[in-house]
Length: 155
Image (cartoon, rainbow, N blue to C red; front, side):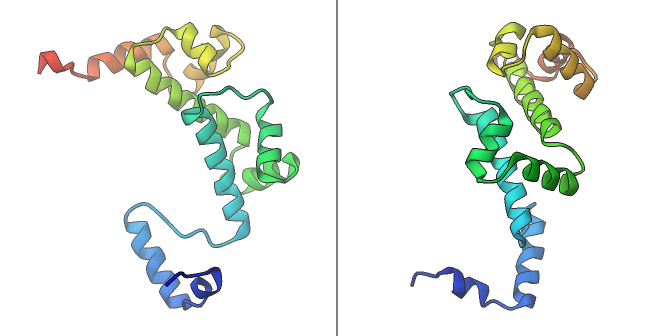
């Protein structure tokens, strides 16, 4: 039997609360308001673009999010900042640095390649932002990441 939105909305407040408690045990939660859904959509769009897209954006993130989510960027920005206590730009920077950390730990890419891949203006700008967020330069991080990881042939 196919459930539709009306059937789902028929569950009681108690049932929703119990479901939410069970989801929280595994690190998830119900998104209950339209605003929270929109904030989640902003995060998903950013994560997908930075971590999983093979194609570079030809427009800036503000335009991308506005078009993708059908809202003015100023509205999205205010909503996100109020709810998440950080700007969309800071969230984007954190996601880029997480992707950079992943690429650095693989040691397959030089810093200039990562800079280009993540669409930073230049390597010094990338290094400055990386150090500001992680407390280490990209080179230091890469060296430490390699020390922490054991290569298969050394096990």
